[in-house]
Length: 361
Image 1 (cartoon, rainbow, N blue to C red):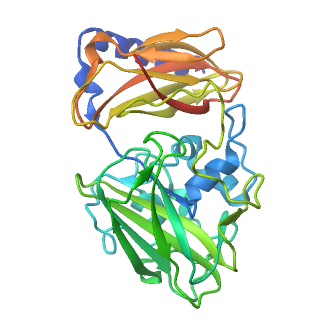
Image 2 (cartoon, rainbow, N blue to C red; image 1 turned 90 degrees about the horizontal axis):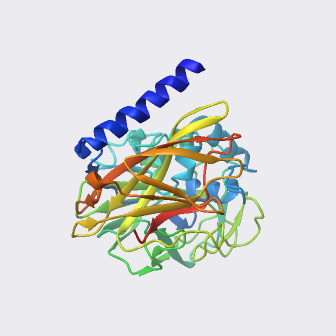
């Protein structure tokens, strides 16, 4: 334990020294878009709604979501909008292996492999065969492109691994309209989808978002049942109704506003008894350089941020944390990103309360 603590401290010191030397290229990288289906809700989206609590802890009630959290970890679930492959380039069958469609072929920066599990107890959206629904797809980072909508063929069982041969393409939509701001829990693309007629029982709606401005693609698996429903969701905390994706699922007045094209993604990179090390990637999804940035969040209950590198840390009287750019990483290139790291003491609750976001620097 002492050795691990010394290694973490050494990493922090090394990162700070390199940053002071202006070696910001070590943390510069391409920014990634983000998004996943919110209606009908994807496995990662609905499991996030099921798991999140008012303290920032993740405590799912759904057994499939609980198993996915145990297998793939909290960082993947906290980044529910990042089921992506940066090199997919519109490829599907023959490129993404059968059985891994719900995890972007296991090529995402995060481990979504658990969300491929063939089981019948994932959260489900209840629909009516032949009806028209309004699809809502997160625009956590907005980019042009096509949305390919597939549905499983009649006779498919949720207890069998999802294969490309199980799917039929029912719609392709290009650059649909958006509602709400990118980088917020409720912001989304939306369009109408007429569901196939003559269907009953379980099915899965699979979507592939093919960006036209890069090779990056997003993958989304939504479990549905054709039983005469109107979008009701079951299998999540407080279920029985339709979770409105136009609102923050964890409303909190301390949630920071997102600004412009700046976006932040939070990850836990290492943890130990009594603390953890985290990282935040700050992205510029704009078409011009971002000159100066700041990120804000409220740590989970029992967590205190101790130190940060590649950014200037300030903690408010209410515990809210703000990290502003250092001199060497002040400017983020268009469609680029930088990262900063931090260490914290914790009672085991390592994730923020509500949303982490960019604020005015």
